[in-house]
Image 1 (tube, rainbow, N blue to C red):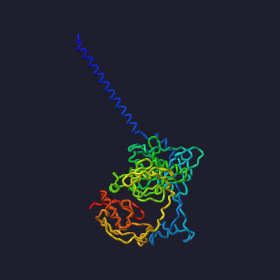
Image 2: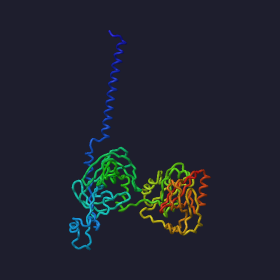
Image 3: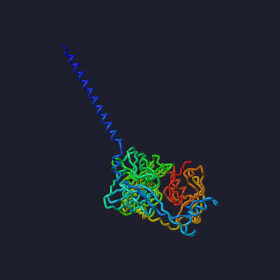
Image 4: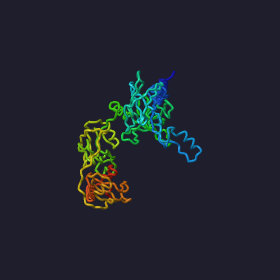
Amino acid sequence: MPSTVAIARQHDSAGLFRLVRLTMLALVLTLAQATVLLAQDRPESFADLAERVSPAVVNITTTTTVAARMDDRPQLPEGSPFEDFFRDFLDDPRGPGAPQRPRQGQALGSGFVISSEGYIVTNNHVIDGADEIQIEFFSGLTLEATLVGTDPATDIALLKVDHDEELPHVGFGDAEATRVGDWVMAVGNPLGQGFSVSAGIISARGRALQGNYDDYIQTDAAINRGNSGGPLFNMDGDVIGVNTAILSPTGGSIGIGFAMSSNVVTGVVDQLREFGSTRRGWLGVRIQNVSDEMAEAVGLEEARGAMVTEVMDGPSKEAGILAGDVILEFDGGNVADSNMLVRRVADAGVGRAVDVVVFRDGSEQTVSVTLGQRELAAANSDGPGMPEPNPEPSSFLGMELAPITDALRVEMDLPAGMRGLVVGSVEPDSDAGSKGILPGDLITEANQQPVNNVTDLRERAEAAREAGRKSLLVLLRRGGDPRFVALSLEE
């Protein structure tokens, strides 16, 4: 008969075995669930998505009348055996003086329908200058489109077609909610091959190419010529971008494509639909990014915000913003750089009063600005003439400098009221030379105060040294464009 101790040991062994079995079962279930989640993250096929959204994607064919030119004909050497043949073939039977017949040019692109009423989004460069715009639907239906409005700044155009029946359409998604690595699908008409689908991931966000309002999604989904204007979809079938450009040394896809963010496109489309053109907010300033040296020169703890280089007649001037102010916040949000400020001002709306926080004279100040409309902004008018300063050529900070005279104003085509210093020469090994200052540049301010002669510039530099600063912030003008440069004061 087994002892009590032996029976207890048997019970313990059985319990331990059951515990191990339960642990193993839980581990298997956990791994199975993880496998299912991974399978869900990686779609087995894009077929269902492509089938659902393709009816709303269209091919666009444009026809443009191009005036013929005499130099369009082939240039053949005199006496060539083909000279007589091409002359007989190409010469107008109406005589050598007859006007040349115009010819028709065609271009292909893509687009997508955003409403059952027939509004279609595409790129401006797809339809720019077109006399006729033909829309081909996935079903084979072909309709002629009319142009509602365009925005060259973002390369977006809005078209409209009329049809008796409701048209299949897609909606916009939130590009800001996407992440690098998310799956995307592009649909369009690459190289004129008709409806085509490609898939990839988001490679980067917030790319800027050349425009002030750029906010591109970079993707490795294959995008080629003809894809322009087509949609970039997320996995929910929402449009998060409009395929616009490729970066390629060959002109073909190498996996670097760009789609304008839906968060930019939706605002543009709404304005084009309502007004036929855009209505962007206007602050009335010229700005530049703040470098580390510029931040040190004005007493800012870190390089951030957008520095005002010029205040034009308009909203900012009326509100009291000054050249040299650093805009740190706009309408309740921080400003990281000048590109961010430009986009936020444009999207803020016309006629709105917004709070702008600027850094001036070592402290932050809040200014209320009522935004104007960029499209209607008037050019600056020249100021009244100022007394002629006495000539005072001198060398300072590695530059040969002289006050602006009437003769220089005429020679350099400067406004009558322009005052400051003209850079005559620059020492190549000086800090001014390393910062890209060139002969002919104008210095109109130093440490946010006007300078009329070299004595003024020396006084500003001495004041900066006494304040413990290592750089002198000067306002430089070249070709009418202002920018700030921080010049080193260290020996």
